Amino acid sequence: MARGRARWTLRRRLVIGIVALLAAVSIAIGVVSVLALRSSLVAGLDDEVSSASNRFQGVAERPREAPGGGGGPRAGDILPFAGMP
Image (cartoon, rainbow, N blue to C red; front, side):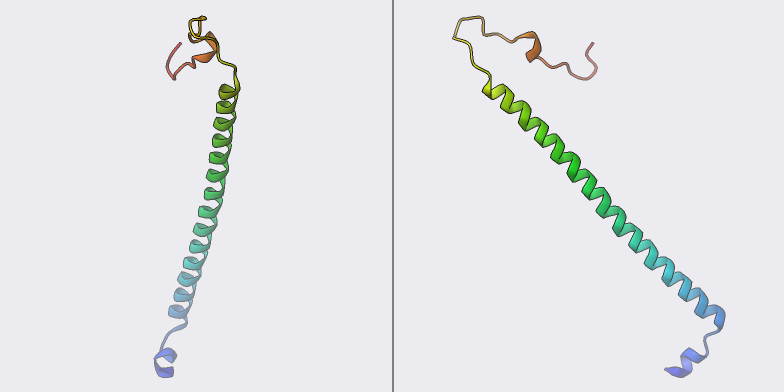
């Protein structure tokens, strides 16, 4: 085994070392990027779920009107959809 390694030229050893180092750095950057993106997306989702929960609690806690007492939708109850004027 030592004979095979002794036959490697300096150029070959340097190229293999640089390629291995580049692969290790690329993997490290990929792992850090995935973890950072995951953390950011989970935080954004948490904010959206919390906001939706707060909106739902506000609607659920609003007192209901008596039947037949003009309990139709109010102007503030209807949310505009994307693309609506």
